[in-house]
Image (cartoon, rainbow, N blue to C red; front, side, top):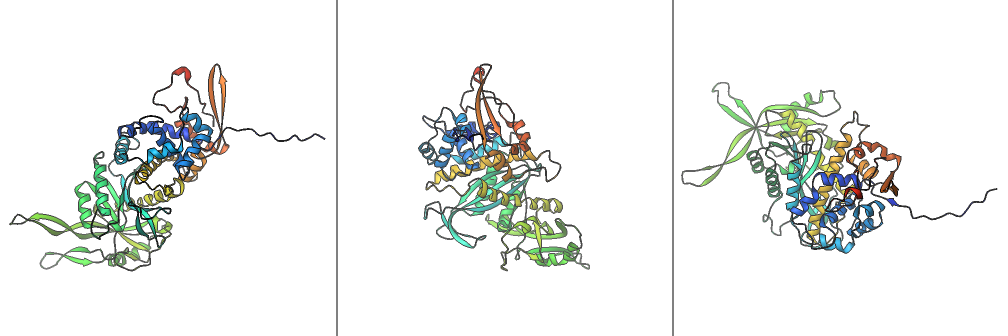
Length: 501
């Protein structure tokens, strides 16, 4: 009988961030380090600021809840130690940097400008801008200046949180990435300060600085405001939203005797009832919609009267009215609205009314509104997989850095997911955002160092599960040493990384 020897304990060179090299390639593709420097994110000495930001992005994808965990990850993870050598990324270095006020909004503008220079991420005519807001709860601090006591309609509870107004881009190719955010502060006196509509206008004007083509804006019924519609149309934005119960609509009719036109007032529920029987007669399993012609809405416009004063008047403007049912947001939303007030959506037996300024393209307006659900998916993904609500710092500057870098991380992941699913021929072949993060960017691997013909090589051994991401590895895996420095290493000092997954 053979004797069983005692186990030996070895310090295995393991890593939990197997996809960090791919992330670094995408980081360099969009010149994020250069954009940070141009925005003024500079330190006097020590670890470069952009390196701290890259670690923060890796930490967000690894779902780290604090800079302490991110610093520990950089010091213990074998792959990150190779990438960040010879820099030591300590917790106090990251805390001191991220609690310092920097122009993060400028960095956000430059990030969008850089994306418009890339053929894959450039916004083109017909692309969709989703507009919505979400809460970011802060459970470990109360009555901080940047927090508000807000009511969450999904959970029916109050909490100390920040209310973020966000716009997101959804391209016709299927690629999507976040654009800008603004924090809405609840005023002490009702009616004072900037509203969410004001913040949305500011962000859309910021987008207009780098994008000149005509775009769609998809939003939920909360943003249904006639003055906001006028603003959108004056800045070359087409809009689509869901009608409320109290939305005033009119139908244009011609009197048979006098041939004079008149506008008959209608309610959205009346329009839905008119076409509901025809709407339900379609034997299809997906989205069903019917356009209703000759529908108008009053919109304000400003004129100068005889006394030279600015006067606001109303005029009838033709809009697209589309009755639709089986929207994806109604199938997946966990929150069912049971209120029957004027602010609730106009609905009749599961059918809704969509309205848009593009009366000449009702089908396109419907397909645009369907894409609005992507921003809800982004909020869920950011909270579940990217540590959206895990920044519990008491510094407002840290929160601005947190959100901007989270948007950067989601942009890089969005490009990777788009490339991953580009060549799929069925839904089973692609992967979801969560599968990509868990199975590639935040999965375990083993690193080994060997010398081959006088050159040191670094080998990264993945699990067989990563084989499904061979396309991403082939496209974005670096060929040389992962030393993240400002200068490029000399050719003789390159450490080759074979693309063997």
